[in-house]
Length: 254
Ligand SMILES: O=C(CO)COP(=O)(O)O
Image 1 (cartoon, rainbow, N blue to C red):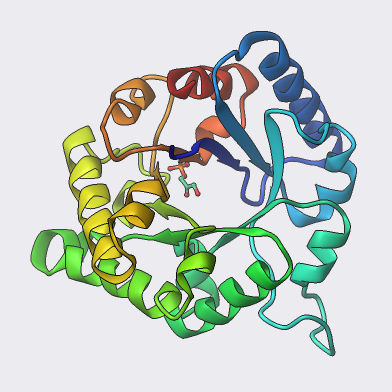
Image 2 (image 1 turned 90 degrees about the vertical axis):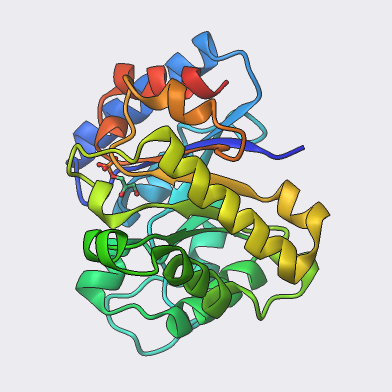
């Protein structure tokens, strides 16, 4: 059985006071109103992760995620945060390879392979992001491009390690633009990704991998996206910054 996950990527938003208010609202609403088997992953800015842990009871429906980490375990990397550090404060998931990190911080598939390794070595779960630009979607082999992202960053893993990964398909043209992929476009890519994974790791693992959709998913379109057979949940940006809207998205998946 695939895990259903709705993750909120807060990106670089919220002051500490605002973050604490949003955390406590979301955690309370989820414990009061969500009855299904969806796991919610909250990914606040790194600076707030340690304090955020106190709002989240272990073993509950809500887990904690970081938005990035460094590829090395420790050392002279001023300003950076490592996977062992995240592990030591009780983080569960780490988003890796978000298109904003690829675009603005030059993260490559090869670098992301290293980040995936260190995250797994420290017992954390990578949420590995992939997705194509608008130009590729309109003029190129966008399916091949996304498959290559997965191949180059993940296919060096053993089957046992690969089975721990969560994948998030986030078409860049849909992120923060209000332009959501249609449910058919999301389903098509998720299906292709599952086939691609099956070709490397076999059907059983491909069927078990959780694949999230991200890109302007919100309270209006979530139910239709999540109704697709290969869409296991969402990685939510803007709509995760308001508690009621985020809860509606979570409930669409429960
Ligand atoms: O990038 C995203 C989540 O990681 C999606 O962002 P939006 O939901 O704001 O489009």
